[in-house]
Length: 292
Image (cartoon, rainbow, N blue to C red; front, side, top):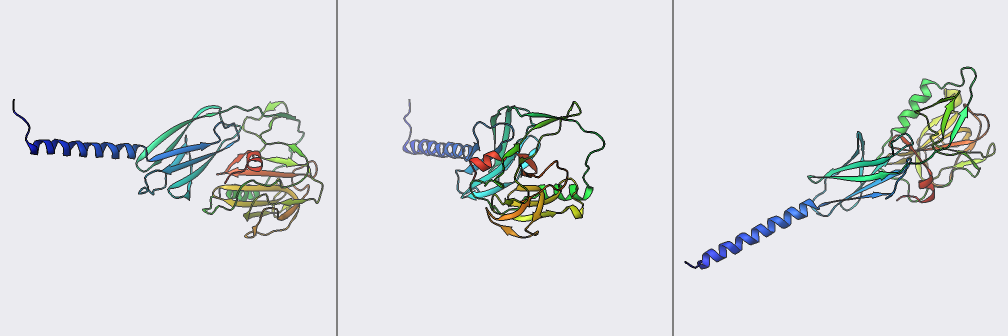
């Protein structure tokens, strides 16, 4: 039996080093993308915060985040760290959902259990045609809800926009004349503030929508829409007074208008709606816990 030469031993050792290096690189590449989703136990109406981070500092490409057919724009929030917001609503199906994150040549699929939630129901009996909105107001409101500006204006918890008691919460389902409205849910929170009581901005933002009854806002009444940045918007309906104009930048706590009874209402109140990437989400977590 022949013994290996010195050159042969070195060649074998060199091959092992190269193989080990390749294996290490493959392992590092496979684990380069880390994904964290908050809250850990979401329920219908919650906003999902998807944070993707590259452990490899040489990777800087923006990851893509999607849930089914829904794709959310992703924003840089730190070194090699990105965040996307995914809204859920009362119309979604509870159960296991799969969030897909692709970046740095890697794709991760994260399973999240979306918990069920019981929303109150109301029965409403209507006679006659009722109050219809105008194409003008619907077009303007729809365009406002689709805003996804790159700047992030909010920071931490949202404030309560009015001090009146809550009379209708988010997500209420309704029967109209005994027929269940499958695609309807209350897209906001109603505050029964007194007529003329102040409505404040719950977070910093730019005034992106001002609509008035005189301009055709028959259903929404006098309306203000705030753009808080990165797909987060909020809307304020049925106002008696508007203190701001489009393009103004407002700070949290600043009075932007006053409670009224304009539009299709039965009495004075403020309807506050919060939207993420065009979908109405529950404002409570934003108000109670807050997100950075």
